[in-house]
Length: 289
Ligand code: SF4
Image (tube, rainbow, N blue to C red; front, side, top):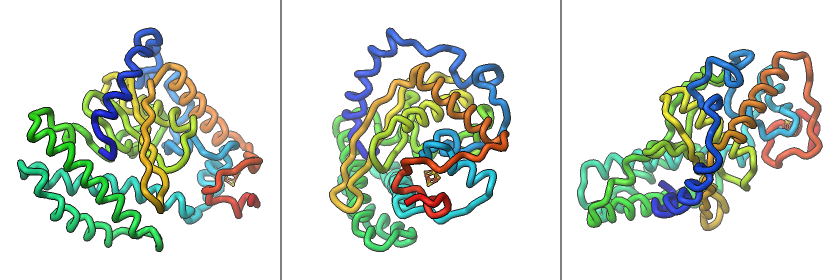
């Protein structure tokens, strides 16, 4: 985990009270995918970014899916995607060593060596190589620190119950069969990593992932966590936002999904938005600066 487990526990504590007075409507549990309001009007295999688009008018979705426009990801998108890949890659390498060794504090050198080989195989944009090396070393330090305490303190192996890059079938809710959730922790905590500023749509996405997970495993997922990774290029800054996956967030996700489906089934061409995110790769196509 890129953050200490005690921080996750502390953040979650705030949410328990909320659940006691704001229960989740059973109709909005993912396992009720076969009836309204969860049953989609059409099954279009949407991605999470199709449903909860960063484009204020969903024009990006229309360009991708109706006009079949393919563009190169922008630099912030490439870097964001690499951050996800590196967290997953480092976790896998760490897991391999930790499973076989009962002295985690001896593993730093060997892990750094393997991770640096792993990094050379990635397509890291020029100028970001050192940052990804630093970020990986931070991750290794963090994982070793948790595992070391678990060894000497005799607590649960908290680095184990965290599974990164969980593949789920979103088709019950009209999404892609191959959705990827950044991480799931034991106890049903769904985790999303984000590079960039906090945005309310991130919470809606998280509710969507929770509902998809519920539709797959038929168990309640009430809590989520967004882990923001920022200051790429400098000293990494990591913060976390605990989210109660309330009925309101779930309704928002369903509204976003239905709006996307309606737009794609109509002949409507969304107009270019007035305010476009800096990182949108469609700017030249939309004629936006
Ligand atoms: S440039 Fe603006 S209008 Fe066009 S897809 Fe991107 S965000 Fe939407």
